Image (tube, rainbow over the protein chains, first blue to last red):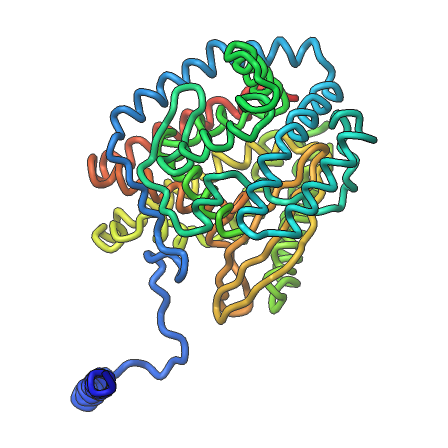
Length: 257
Length: 207
């Protein structure tokens, strides 16, 4: 073994010298030597270092585009009109409270996944917010966390798998659920076991009840949204690619946190 | 309001922009972002300046802080090097118009948001400035990637909630150039710009 190491070291030294010498030779005969500037020219067509381009693996693009089209129609012809009607009936404060309630309800998923990633402080923060809001905040209807508190980043099982190095796999657009990827789709199923609403373990709701509650959550969320999807549709040359890139970037950033 | 009054306001604003722009030299990247964003908010709060006049002042202001050539290079990536000088120039011009058409109208939604300037990281000629936009019910982190040129720092990418604007454009523009060439891309961009200019401000659905 030491011999091998020595040979490799030698090779490395040779390589380093070799390139150095050829560089020296070049600058010796080339009259137009490199300017003595300390900073090399930045190649702006490359993205930043440590920020390599997110290659999105999308082998089933035709299927995904079909699902994207379906979700687009679902959004504009069903969910959005319902959300608008709901927005008209329910005041913003009520809708915000409903949003708080659903967020609080999903706390077990976040606590568990923070723990699984070894993020003790995040888990503790999630747990204490959950306990305070569930009691003094009346079942989570009111968010009593101080305004200036930095909200912990919501963890899920897809992020947990990513945290331990599992790649995202192919890009996938699910009907109704929207953009995801192979890994996060598995995560979605895993999280549904611990989330109180779909979980088959504790509240044991019927599938139709689960679907109803989840739809309400989505509609409520949409009623608070400021037309994010509309602006993407309006601005992007190809909304499908825009959403795909945004989704993959967002997941990558969340896993890093 | 009389037209001459509007004109005077416009001139005052323009002078202010130039003046502050000069005062901004040799400032840190964070300071430069702060100066520009504060000016934008100041203009949005003034009710005197409206419509086309306001749009013009905002456009001037934003364009003085962004480096559209670098943004274009990054958006096209490897395709940039293969493009002719005319194609490059055409792209820069179309891309800046497109960004302006998309985002300046969005500023009309401004209500009472405030911005906090949290940190700056300088690495040689580049820097990242982290800010947070606080609105009534959410906080949105916005980071600016900047490059140093002489005394000034210019924005070459904006990250909203960790999503890079340039990467988003890069992914779709690359594919369009590959499939349809520059002619196809320019055609699509021109169409989009007229589309956006014809309907200023997205539809009025508010929370």
